[in-house]
Image 1 (cartoon, rainbow, N blue to C red):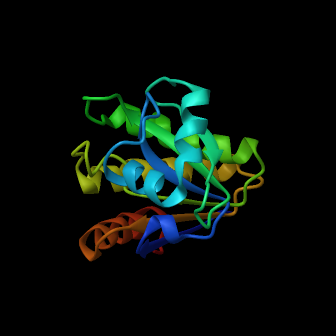
Image 2 (cartoon, rainbow, N blue to C red):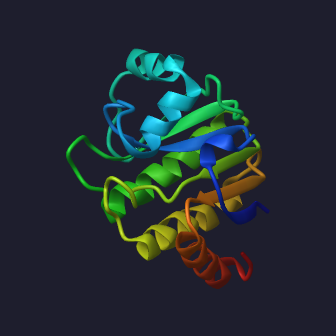
Length: 171
């Protein structure tokens, strides 16, 4: 069983196997969380993204974490440049991030509320989709044991806790 926890804080400060970046499919780390990851993690992250190249919306790619405390960054492409996050792209990219962590033998992963910043996605719908994908993933996980959701503010944390309570019976 996977341990799912909800926190309020700074995702870039988490010491886990991977933090998840709310990315665009071009893997250009511009604004929002991606910009913070690029600034705090150093230029190597963007250089690895550029070397990797574009991915499809709904997919994920992994790089090193540069100067961040995490070991890796998983770039979850829930939108394209100038586009918005959709239910489908969030569902697919969340699943892709989880499977990428599993494929690489990672134990711990920390997600933001993907798509709710720059892309303007609804917070409650984000929590329902992302936590639903984690629940669906629980049966196939072997290496991933800890999934954290790290939210910027108390309001977002409350929404994720409410949805987690409904899905897992805990927050």
